[in-house]
Length: 394
Length: 129
Image 1 (tube, chains in turn blue, yellow):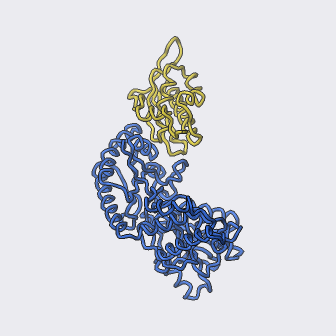
Image 2 (cartoon, helix red, strand yellow):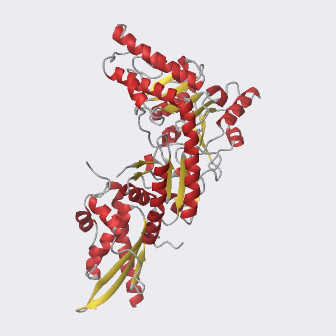
Image 3 (cartoon, each protein chain N blue to C red):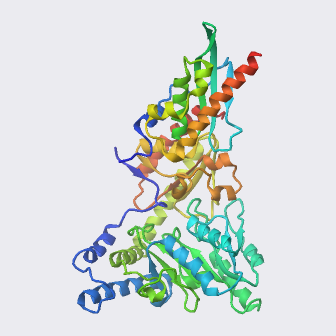
């Protein structure tokens, strides 16, 4: 049975060019980038080059890129690092109710430790209102962290608008130093503008394995002059912000993945993905009664579909589809083993039951028309059968 | 390899034998009052045999994950032919060996099914009065 993968928001397969770029550093060029001999210098050269690639992509300087072991680590560094670096006795943080847990959990931890938190609500489309960010700013606000594109519903937030507004707030003389602005851009990198100057961010998180790179490597953009404290201490790697011997092959892989998404071929693929996604949504609504699209239809990642089918439970749909060789997920891959309904869907105003009956379909580079057709043949029958089992009346 | 869904669980999920309503049920139990995403409904038909009340038929309707569905199906199998007193004792110790390993996160589905059976029997007792 040919397997169909429609869970690109969870992770992506490794691009063969990325693997090829990584191979030398897993084999003969194994040196430690801190060593001064030839082996080490070769590794250091590769890391430097990768840093330049990442910097060019984000429109910043190489010294502003910090490689980490994951995007979760990069988010932790941004949040804990900014709060520690602010040296404020009662720091205030503004974030949203629809962040990834890699932002929410650090925020909750800081709240336990005495920080003041504002979790901004979103509208029914899953969007943060920039004016609400402005209203929430206090004299002790040290950090604003808003996800660029949501992992569950693909809602694209007005990051550039918020960035501009935060800059304005500073020039209006409200504070001498504006709060640091962080965005988790993990899901956005594949599809959206990531120039940090255009976005007006001080901190930006990205991940390799969401862009056809390897797992176990992420990066944080840290704008020059931002006061960030490290979380991991040791040999002072990554400008003192993240100690630990560089994962050279992983870093090279991240850089190659970034190169690939900047190619015209990738941009063409994104157009194809959007067409497939639009067709998929349209046809599902035709074939399955009582379906609803969660999140904004227009401010949305081109590859993301999140639907609720009342009377059919999410995990049951996922397992039934998996039996037919189709892999996708409920709400968020990370929460599929948790029992609580998705915090993102609840923030949109869905009932617990609606949130429990959600399905996330995320397309990617290798998605074909045939795969979409297979899903369209399979899904309606599964929803119908589960609705029969639950006694749902259509 | 540990499978999140065992073979047996999948079998009952994909081909449940006891799904649906019993139109002239003697007792209907649900779990609406338990705060959990899953909703289970159990329908029972009771007959008197040698002076004892025995569950003759059991069916379910479940809005829940694959485990919830297969556990509902299994508990219907297990309570059929049992007296009310025996049926109330059916639980994890009977379901786990029958279905194979149940992940810790899914153990609550078993308790949900037990609660639905209990609620159906209580409903039957109220109706009988």
